[in-house]
Image: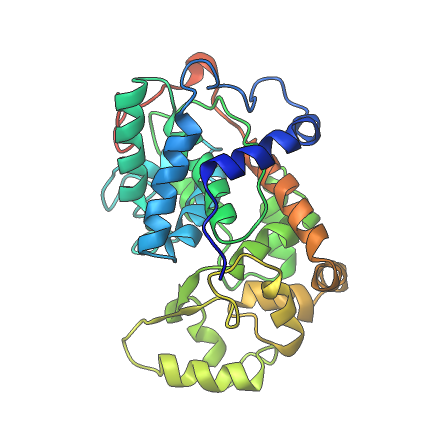
Length: 323
């Protein structure tokens, strides 16, 4: 049985990656050592908080990883997703996030510990980035050195949250365009989609694939089980994105696609409708090490989307509210 890695073991892996990942980032503003002197225990505090949450609820790893993604795609990696709002203000209640994103209380708890250890030092945006990495590690995925030094925004962007996050029924062309809009490539898109190897989705995210004329890219076995699960009523149950290894970060997401077992349309189209993306999917099926390596690179790249630096932002004392 696999054991949960300790922060010390992860730190040893990260130190071994120092030269490689630092060179890949190419940036001078965000650096892995940002808190080494001002809050040296910062990453250990985040790791412990994520580990506790995942031990209590294994699905939380996917939720925290997804939260970082939804933050970065909307006005950059600035923790705007964490700001409380209401039905007309804030990103939490935007269409792609409302009653869907979860894990805010985990970030709140980690932030409270960090404010006690080193007040006013560690940004909420950096907590999200570290927590995403730790979620991958705790489910068996690769480790990488997170580039740090982001500041937090003072305002959310509900409009961007409704427009910039890829819908689950997207085709390949739309996915590529939306990733290009934030500076990510077609390869980044296919690679980061592999995060769906963990986590769950509600029937509302794929119910349109089950109608009287089912999506032809949907495998018969999966179609039958999803019709039984979802039916055509008002219930909205959850099911695993990866049917075989749903709480293990591996290349299972890609291995499911040739048999039509990509849960979301935006997953299955990567294999079934476009040769450009199909070729990379097949490569990852046969080369899990390449997927792990490229996932690290793409996560670092995503974490560098429009960060707030210096006086452009603040370090929030509470992640739900501006100072």
